[in-house]
Image 1 (cartoon, rainbow, N blue to C red):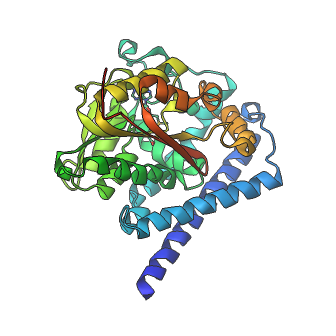
Image 2 (image 1 turned 135 degrees about the vertical axis):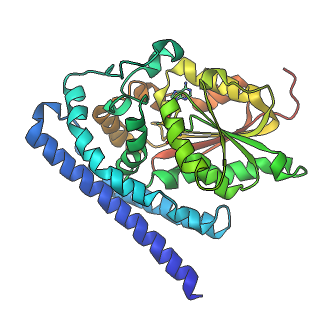
Image 3 (image 1 turned 30 degrees about the horizontal axis):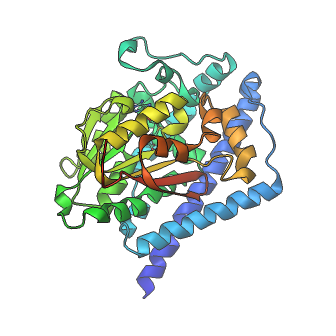
Length: 357
Ligand SMILES: C[S@@+](CC[C@H](N)C(=O)[O-])C[C@H]1O[C@@H](n2cnc3c(N)ncnc32)[C@H](O)[C@@H]1O
């Protein structure tokens, strides 16, 4: 009996440490910017005390659910501790070294500061910018190496916990195919980036065939290094546009998509949903996770506003007022459900079994 409570204590301690580290990093980097690049300071609204309390309690609810779902066996408890810790530690100084160029871009409102060798023909226009003001946008190994750390810092150590919220609905959704062996099921992670979600799906569903798609070859290289190095190939990684998925009709049973939609213009959001519908087998499940929105989380609006002011997120404002459920319906999905976990909204939707299209 002592072991489970020790593991829980270790998990809570890890989460608290990540939160403190994230807060300390942000506090220090803001002070440094005030000192060295005051012109780059974004104008943000102070977060009222009540909202801070709300955010804290919502974070703690996320942590409890994360533990609870591990206890229920939705994913192994080891998943709660999984991260390339040594790699992250060795890359952390680079996050600091990268800050001045980020400030420079924000100050100069330079949002098209991309590597010279980028072949702009193969990307949609909306993609060719420095999302979050990040160096090289999504288009270099340097950017891919820093991304996971930057996101964990942004979310005060909760990014992986928020991503894990797709696992329970995905597993529930795939039960529709329980008469088949797991090994015959295919799950696709759209806009997989560095593959954190794929890695989580792999631990929750060890036997399914896994596919990951992203527009960035550099991010896929990073995903491949962390996913496919030690234990053979854990997932097949494909470079492509989520608006034109390079997969056959009805060829996968489950799709996840995490933190993509707020970075797409509205027409692209609909195109991606249409494509997910096309490649899903009837009865298949789509689990989509992204930022909470104004309608479901009005109390968090000041935090959403600040996010948009600090980071270059050109489509975020449109996204937070978009009716995602109506988009699901327009694509033909049914059984649509949604829930919020801290700053993330998770939608689940099914392709109808009777496909009359
Ligand atoms: C905010 S990141 C999220 C990555 C990952 N899902 C995660 O949880 O960290 C957005 C990702 O979407 C990818 N992306 C953006 N537009 C895309 C598109 N049209 N098709 C495929 N990938 C796209 C980017 O390259 C990037 O890896």
